[in-house]
Amino acid sequence: MLDTVLYPLEWVVAWLMVNFHQAFSFVGLPKDSGFTWSLSIVGLVIVIRIVLIPLFVKQIHASRRMQLIQPEMQKIQKKYKGKSDPESRQAMTQETMGLYKRTGTNPFSSCLPILLQSPVFFALFRVLQGLTKIGQGIQDPIGPMTKELARSAEGSTVFGAPLSSYFVGAGESPQPLNTQIVTVLLIILMSATTFTTQRQLMMKNMPANALDNPFAKQQKALLYLMPVFFAFSGINFPIGVLLYWTTTNVWSMGQQFYTIRRMPAPGSPAEKALEARRIKSGKEHKKFSIPGLTHDSESEEIQDTPVAETKPKSGQRQQPKRKNRGKPAGPNDPKPGPTPPATADGDS
Image (cartoon, rainbow, N blue to C red; front, side, top):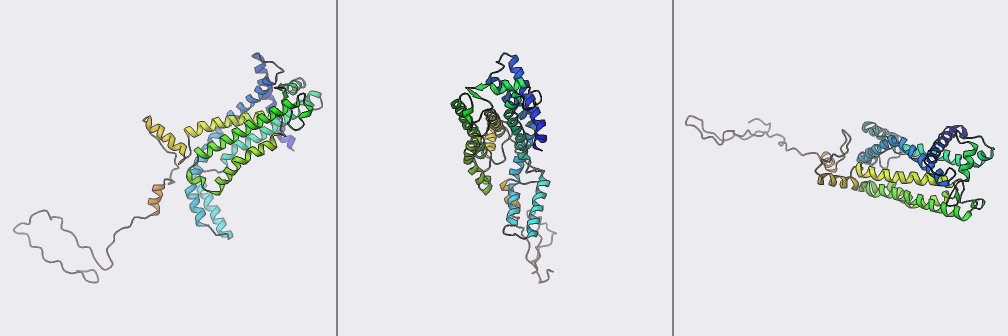
């Protein structure tokens, strides 16, 4: 089942690698060099990330909408706080889904780029894993990855480390120490880029109120646990896969830096910095907003606190005021008499 699902992606991955390899070989790079095949993997990353740009834009808009509806979400959560009966749970779910529908927010849009990259990641893993068998004729070629090209890719090295070699089992490679050093360096780069990307997101592109909740605290804990996870998992991946992972992390870091600077989340420090830059340059700063949704703190206070109206006491009628106070009375005008006291039923 897994082979059936992944084979089309394996074919695309192999096709992109082979075509980039041919292009780099055409401009003069050594055909059997590990750097040429490494650049082919980098080219694979660039093509995939360019294809995913529309989804990335949707992810940014979804994240900004999620930030804007947080006050409304907190109101719903506060309304049903402490209520665990099925009716309350169902009502809370319905109100939450209604809020998503009314504001055009999809909480799953922010996960699409990551979810769509995962199959490509595993497809590349299987292509690199099958290079030896394809080169020996044990496994059928994957698309344009012929027996000769598989031998070339499998035998290519980067600083003495084959692209298809692992940290675990490095003793089988021609230069085990080189394989281990290259693997460790890629794992460190992969962990550093992931840490920088996530820290940049939390420190610059999240409002202060969004950092003070259990979900944000979990993200902060994961920020420091991810390098440990990469250290244990990275030793089980080929160098080519680690190179792909590191390259896509570098792309994500640069893409996120540009996005935070140009399209920051509402209420975040990055938005305040953008507003200051635009005011300094004489440009108008228009904040991102959802029609019909109040997200400004001051407007929320005005809505939550109704304006008190001054009404006359029961049983009394307000007496009309003379409009011609400033006009002197004429000789034929009647003199104003004393105002009769109001009765209990409001008639004078």
